[in-house]
Image (tube, helix red, strand yellow):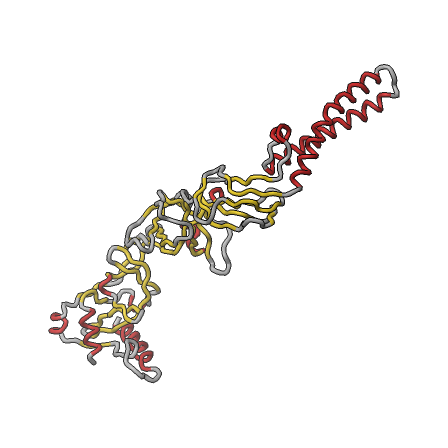
Length: 371
């Protein structure tokens, strides 16, 4: 053990002496100090070794509130037209079925005209079909005419149904047209209840089925969207509980349940997307708000030391290794923390069973800085 500790001290000493030192910092200061027995007692220095302890590690990442596709609606024109009226603006709340806009176009008249013509021809084709059927009983030559009349009847019937379906699709009531006449306008209604988030229409603007007029978002059922590293992919599962917090709520945590796990990895970020459903949604929350997501992973036995044994300086972590009365400051890589203990990663074999100072490290560091 003595030879191993001296070897560590030699390597650290060589490293700390390389290059010019313009100003003294933690890397440039001495890494070893010898204390008397009296000093050790005065500093109340106690030691322990690195040991494996049960950790319940947590993973933290940034996420945001998103909307389920069924709760986000893009409102477009079912047919070409010019905007005649707009009734809502960004931020307004609308109920499903509310009148959003009115469009106008002369082509609407042609559809209605074709429908009425096809409707009026129904009786003619029915009577012609009957007449040709009666004649075919007496004259064999009339069978061909009867078949033609039958074909014409069904062709007109198909045309009539198609025109009626087309009128219903764009919002024109066929029965109303039959009773009240043609209309040059169609109405656009809200497909869902929610808030208007985008408006692209204005009076006189030409719109088609590729141009959206409004966007509506129902924010009553928000989702959590976040990404985790690929190496954690098999540590999460559907219906797994997670926690999240808002940036301005301090330590207040809320719960959520994982509902969707991405099946394609992002090769650029080496992550995979996760969707979770919050247990409850505060009315003050909005899509796009950032959150911190906290995932409790499976328990693991990890090598660790008490938090008090680790000194953090300039974004680096150090421990003190005791070799008789000699105390050596050694840099270490730390990981997760749990119940007052910190994981020690990539432990050099030379210090795996060494005596590590767990009490009095501030005194040792102060003594080093005074050298």
